[in-house]
Length: 180
Image (cartoon, rainbow, N blue to C red; front, side):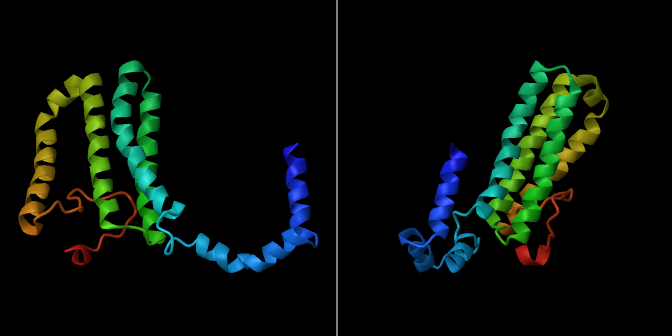
């Protein structure tokens, strides 16, 4: 039934008459190009997709903890980590390629990473507490470096700097001089 309706609509647009005249008057070529241009339309999906990936990763942080509490299988947890990694890589790459990367998105990316890795740390604490007891000094140094970076950025710039001390895996080219 739907196929029949779509076929009838296509014939109405192609056949001579008021439908075809309306299509010609609209000059759809130029309007379609402007509609799908991310630069002219901030509500466009190209603006929303990287932000949705960041939100997905932020939601995956508490989600991975809940999955860990309900499931003994590590395969689902590994799938969550892979999904977060793919989302982290592609949100930066796509935002940079589409020229929609903003300071707000970069800060959101940093916050989402922090939430996700806090969730991973909680899963490790819940599932493997002895492994963390053996490596507590290494974990304490890692946390100290990350906190020190935030304190240094706040002291130097008066705000949280979106750069990461430990590097990034999200595919974006970080030009430190452009952000300072």
